[in-house]
Image 1: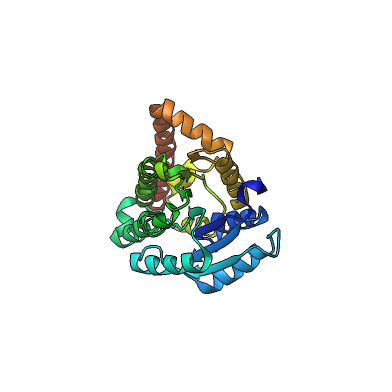
Image 2 (image 1 turned 90 degrees about the vertical axis):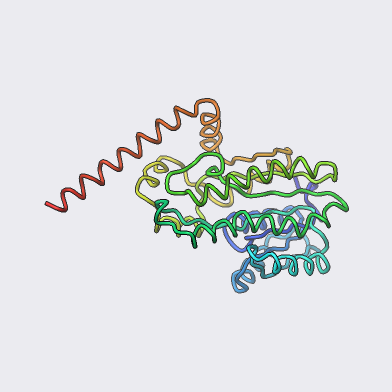
Length: 282
Protein backbone atom coordinates (compact mmCIF):
# COMPACT_ATOMS: atom_id res chain seq x y z
CA UNK A 1 0.00 0.00 0.00
CA UNK A 2 2.81 2.42 0.87
CA UNK A 3 4.32 1.95 -2.57
CA UNK A 4 1.04 3.21 -4.06
CA UNK A 5 1.14 6.58 -2.20
CA UNK A 6 4.78 7.30 -1.31
CA UNK A 7 5.85 10.70 -2.60
CA UNK A 8 2.39 11.55 -3.97
CA UNK A 9 0.92 15.01 -3.45
CA UNK A 10 -2.49 14.77 -1.77
CA UNK A 11 -4.87 17.74 -1.52
CA UNK A 12 -7.77 17.33 0.93
CA UNK A 13 -10.52 19.93 1.34
CA UNK A 14 -12.28 19.62 4.68
CA UNK A 15 -9.02 18.16 5.94
CA UNK A 16 -9.00 19.72 9.40
CA UNK A 17 -11.44 17.25 10.99
CA UNK A 18 -13.53 14.11 10.56
CA UNK A 19 -13.02 11.85 7.57
CA UNK A 20 -10.71 14.34 5.87
CA UNK A 21 -8.29 14.47 8.80
CA UNK A 22 -8.35 10.70 9.31
CA UNK A 23 -7.58 10.17 5.63
CA UNK A 24 -4.74 12.70 5.77
CA UNK A 25 -3.12 10.94 8.73
CA UNK A 26 -3.37 7.50 7.14
CA UNK A 27 -1.99 8.69 3.81
CA UNK A 28 0.86 10.46 5.61
CA UNK A 29 1.66 7.14 7.27
CA UNK A 30 1.89 5.66 3.76
CA UNK A 31 4.45 8.25 2.67
CA UNK A 32 2.27 10.87 0.94
CA UNK A 33 2.78 14.64 1.03
CA UNK A 34 -0.34 16.23 2.49
CA UNK A 35 -1.91 19.64 1.90
CA UNK A 36 -5.18 20.24 3.77
CA UNK A 37 -7.73 23.00 3.24
CA UNK A 38 -10.48 24.41 5.47
CA UNK A 39 -11.82 27.77 6.59
CA UNK A 40 -10.41 28.04 10.14
CA UNK A 41 -6.69 28.58 10.61
CA UNK A 42 -6.55 27.38 14.22
CA UNK A 43 -8.12 24.03 13.35
CA UNK A 44 -5.85 23.69 10.33
CA UNK A 45 -2.74 24.29 12.43
CA UNK A 46 -3.80 21.69 14.98
CA UNK A 47 -4.68 19.17 12.25
CA UNK A 48 -1.36 19.67 10.44
CA UNK A 49 0.50 19.04 13.70
CA UNK A 50 -1.40 15.76 14.10
CA UNK A 51 -0.70 14.71 10.52
CA UNK A 52 3.05 15.35 10.88
CA UNK A 53 3.18 12.82 13.72
CA UNK A 54 2.09 10.10 11.27
CA UNK A 55 4.68 10.80 8.54
CA UNK A 56 6.98 7.94 7.57
CA UNK A 57 9.99 10.13 6.79
CA UNK A 58 11.36 13.59 7.51
CA UNK A 59 11.29 14.45 3.83
CA UNK A 60 7.49 14.40 3.60
CA UNK A 61 5.71 17.72 3.22
CA UNK A 62 2.67 18.63 5.32
CA UNK A 63 1.03 22.02 5.00
CA UNK A 64 -2.33 23.79 5.06
CA UNK A 65 -4.18 26.68 3.47
CA UNK A 66 -7.34 28.53 4.37
CA UNK A 67 -10.11 28.44 1.78
CA UNK A 68 -13.88 28.77 1.48
CA UNK A 69 -14.77 26.15 -1.12
CA UNK A 70 -18.11 27.83 -1.81
CA UNK A 71 -16.36 30.99 -3.06
CA UNK A 72 -15.05 30.30 -6.57
CA UNK A 73 -12.74 33.35 -6.70
CA UNK A 74 -11.21 32.42 -3.35
CA UNK A 75 -10.76 28.81 -4.48
CA UNK A 76 -9.07 29.80 -7.75
CA UNK A 77 -6.66 32.11 -5.94
CA UNK A 78 -5.77 29.66 -3.17
CA UNK A 79 -5.40 26.64 -5.46
CA UNK A 80 -3.15 28.55 -7.84
CA UNK A 81 -0.92 29.38 -4.88
CA UNK A 82 -1.04 25.78 -3.69
CA UNK A 83 0.12 24.42 -7.04
CA UNK A 84 2.93 26.96 -7.23
CA UNK A 85 4.17 26.20 -3.71
CA UNK A 86 3.35 22.51 -3.32
CA UNK A 87 3.11 21.17 -6.85
CA UNK A 88 -0.09 19.86 -8.50
CA UNK A 89 -2.04 17.10 -6.75
CA UNK A 90 -1.69 13.45 -7.66
CA UNK A 91 -4.75 12.82 -5.51
CA UNK A 92 -7.51 15.36 -4.83
CA UNK A 93 -10.03 14.48 -2.13
CA UNK A 94 -13.07 16.76 -2.05
CA UNK A 95 -14.18 16.18 1.54
CA UNK A 96 -15.58 19.55 2.62
CA UNK A 97 -19.21 19.13 3.59
CA UNK A 98 -22.04 20.14 5.89
CA UNK A 99 -25.59 19.10 6.71
CA UNK A 100 -28.62 20.69 8.33
CA UNK A 101 -31.26 17.98 8.78
CA UNK A 102 -34.81 19.08 9.55
CA UNK A 103 -38.30 18.88 8.11
CA UNK A 104 -38.27 20.30 4.57
CA UNK A 105 -40.38 23.36 5.41
CA UNK A 106 -38.11 24.21 8.37
CA UNK A 107 -34.83 24.10 6.48
CA UNK A 108 -35.31 27.36 4.62
CA UNK A 109 -33.54 28.72 1.57
CA UNK A 110 -30.50 30.05 3.46
CA UNK A 111 -29.64 26.62 4.87
CA UNK A 112 -30.32 24.95 1.51
CA UNK A 113 -28.07 27.47 -0.23
CA UNK A 114 -25.23 26.96 2.27
CA UNK A 115 -25.47 23.17 1.89
CA UNK A 116 -25.40 23.29 -1.90
CA UNK A 117 -22.53 25.80 -1.99
CA UNK A 118 -20.40 23.69 0.32
CA UNK A 119 -21.25 20.17 -0.81
CA UNK A 120 -21.74 20.60 -4.55
CA UNK A 121 -20.54 24.02 -5.70
CA UNK A 122 -17.49 23.65 -3.48
CA UNK A 123 -16.61 20.37 -5.17
CA UNK A 124 -17.12 21.93 -8.60
CA UNK A 125 -14.98 24.96 -7.71
CA UNK A 126 -12.04 22.97 -6.38
CA UNK A 127 -12.11 20.44 -9.22
CA UNK A 128 -12.38 23.16 -11.87
CA UNK A 129 -9.38 24.98 -10.38
CA UNK A 130 -7.16 21.88 -10.30
CA UNK A 131 -8.12 19.73 -13.30
CA UNK A 132 -6.08 21.84 -15.77
CA UNK A 133 -2.96 21.08 -13.70
CA UNK A 134 -3.87 17.42 -13.18
CA UNK A 135 -4.36 16.89 -16.92
CA UNK A 136 -0.62 17.39 -17.42
CA UNK A 137 0.32 14.16 -15.63
CA UNK A 138 -2.89 12.36 -14.59
CA UNK A 139 -4.02 11.50 -11.09
CA UNK A 140 -7.15 10.71 -9.14
CA UNK A 141 -10.09 12.70 -7.79
CA UNK A 142 -12.20 11.45 -4.88
CA UNK A 143 -15.54 13.15 -4.34
CA UNK A 144 -17.12 12.50 -0.97
CA UNK A 145 -20.84 11.88 -1.27
CA UNK A 146 -22.78 9.80 1.26
CA UNK A 147 -25.04 6.79 1.54
CA UNK A 148 -27.65 9.57 1.48
CA UNK A 149 -26.41 10.31 -2.04
CA UNK A 150 -27.71 6.89 -3.09
CA UNK A 151 -30.83 6.61 -0.90
CA UNK A 152 -33.18 9.47 -0.04
CA UNK A 153 -33.41 9.97 3.72
CA UNK A 154 -36.28 11.56 5.67
CA UNK A 155 -35.20 14.94 7.05
CA UNK A 156 -32.27 15.34 4.64
CA UNK A 157 -33.88 16.96 1.59
CA UNK A 158 -31.17 19.61 1.14
CA UNK A 159 -28.33 17.24 1.97
CA UNK A 160 -29.62 14.48 -0.31
CA UNK A 161 -30.06 16.96 -3.15
CA UNK A 162 -26.40 17.95 -2.85
CA UNK A 163 -25.06 14.42 -2.39
CA UNK A 164 -27.13 12.89 -5.21
CA UNK A 165 -25.68 15.72 -7.32
CA UNK A 166 -22.17 14.63 -6.35
CA UNK A 167 -22.86 11.14 -7.75
CA UNK A 168 -24.06 12.51 -11.10
CA UNK A 169 -21.21 15.00 -11.29
CA UNK A 170 -18.67 12.26 -10.57
CA UNK A 171 -20.07 9.83 -13.14
CA UNK A 172 -19.96 12.46 -15.88
CA UNK A 173 -16.54 13.71 -14.79
CA UNK A 174 -15.16 10.18 -14.74
CA UNK A 175 -16.16 9.69 -18.36
CA UNK A 176 -14.64 13.01 -19.47
CA UNK A 177 -11.30 12.71 -17.68
CA UNK A 178 -10.39 9.13 -18.62
CA UNK A 179 -8.51 10.26 -21.72
CA UNK A 180 -6.22 12.37 -19.53
CA UNK A 181 -5.34 9.52 -17.20
CA UNK A 182 -7.37 11.01 -14.35
CA UNK A 183 -9.46 8.56 -12.37
CA UNK A 184 -12.57 9.57 -10.42
CA UNK A 185 -14.00 7.80 -7.37
CA UNK A 186 -16.92 8.52 -5.06
CA UNK A 187 -16.89 7.80 -1.33
CA UNK A 188 -20.37 7.10 0.12
CA UNK A 189 -19.99 6.68 3.88
CA UNK A 190 -22.91 5.86 6.19
CA UNK A 191 -23.39 7.74 9.49
CA UNK A 192 -19.89 8.53 10.77
CA UNK A 193 -18.84 9.75 14.21
CA UNK A 194 -17.56 13.19 13.21
CA UNK A 195 -17.98 16.65 14.80
CA UNK A 196 -20.50 17.42 12.05
CA UNK A 197 -22.61 14.40 12.94
CA UNK A 198 -22.95 15.63 16.52
CA UNK A 199 -24.21 18.98 15.22
CA UNK A 200 -26.74 17.25 12.95
CA UNK A 201 -28.34 15.50 15.91
CA UNK A 202 -29.44 18.88 17.28
CA UNK A 203 -32.00 19.42 14.50
CA UNK A 204 -32.61 15.88 13.25
CA UNK A 205 -36.35 14.92 13.16
CA UNK A 206 -37.48 12.04 15.34
CA UNK A 207 -38.42 10.07 12.22
CA UNK A 208 -34.83 10.32 11.00
CA UNK A 209 -33.45 9.13 14.33
CA UNK A 210 -35.77 6.12 14.25
CA UNK A 211 -34.75 5.15 10.71
CA UNK A 212 -31.05 5.21 11.59
CA UNK A 213 -31.35 3.77 15.10
CA UNK A 214 -30.23 0.26 14.12
CA UNK A 215 -27.38 1.41 11.89
CA UNK A 216 -23.81 1.10 13.08
CA UNK A 217 -22.01 4.42 13.56
CA UNK A 218 -18.63 4.17 11.81
CA UNK A 219 -15.45 5.86 12.96
CA UNK A 220 -13.66 8.33 10.64
CA UNK A 221 -10.55 6.15 10.85
CA UNK A 222 -12.40 3.10 9.52
CA UNK A 223 -14.01 5.10 6.73
CA UNK A 224 -10.60 6.46 5.75
CA UNK A 225 -9.07 2.99 5.82
CA UNK A 226 -11.72 1.61 3.51
CA UNK A 227 -11.38 4.62 1.20
CA UNK A 228 -7.68 3.88 0.77
CA UNK A 229 -8.38 0.20 0.12
CA UNK A 230 -11.02 1.19 -2.45
CA UNK A 231 -8.56 3.47 -4.22
CA UNK A 232 -5.95 0.72 -4.35
CA UNK A 233 -8.57 -1.59 -5.90
CA UNK A 234 -9.62 1.06 -8.45
CA UNK A 235 -13.26 1.17 -7.35
CA UNK A 236 -15.55 3.93 -8.54
CA UNK A 237 -18.18 3.84 -5.80
CA UNK A 238 -16.64 3.11 -2.40
CA UNK A 239 -19.13 2.27 0.37
CA UNK A 240 -17.48 1.65 3.74
CA UNK A 241 -19.04 -0.94 6.03
CA UNK A 242 -21.03 -4.10 5.42
CA UNK A 243 -24.36 -2.54 6.43
CA UNK A 244 -23.99 0.27 3.90
CA UNK A 245 -23.14 -2.11 1.07
CA UNK A 246 -26.14 -4.35 1.86
CA UNK A 247 -28.50 -1.37 2.16
CA UNK A 248 -27.44 -0.05 -1.25
CA UNK A 249 -27.72 -3.50 -2.84
CA UNK A 250 -31.23 -4.04 -1.48
CA UNK A 251 -32.23 -0.54 -2.60
CA UNK A 252 -31.06 -1.30 -6.15
CA UNK A 253 -32.71 -4.73 -6.34
CA UNK A 254 -35.84 -4.17 -4.25
CA UNK A 255 -36.53 -0.41 -4.02
CA UNK A 256 -40.18 -0.88 -3.01
CA UNK A 257 -39.14 -3.08 -0.07
CA UNK A 258 -36.77 -0.43 1.28
CA UNK A 259 -39.47 2.21 0.87
CA UNK A 260 -42.02 0.07 2.70
CA UNK A 261 -39.67 -0.55 5.63
CA UNK A 262 -38.78 3.12 5.94
CA UNK A 263 -42.42 4.19 5.64
CA UNK A 264 -43.33 1.78 8.42
CA UNK A 265 -40.68 3.20 10.73
CA UNK A 266 -41.79 6.76 9.96
CA UNK A 267 -45.48 6.02 10.59
CA UNK A 268 -44.58 4.41 13.91
CA UNK A 269 -42.77 7.53 15.11
CA UNK A 270 -45.44 9.89 13.82
CA UNK A 271 -48.13 7.92 15.62
CA UNK A 272 -46.14 8.07 18.86
CA UNK A 273 -45.58 11.81 18.50
CA UNK A 274 -49.26 12.36 17.80
CA UNK A 275 -50.28 10.40 20.89
CA UNK A 276 -47.76 12.31 23.00
CA UNK A 277 -49.10 15.65 21.79
CA UNK A 278 -52.69 14.54 22.41
CA UNK A 279 -51.76 13.47 25.94
CA UNK A 280 -50.08 16.79 26.62
CA UNK A 281 -53.22 18.71 25.61
CA UNK A 282 -55.40 16.72 27.99
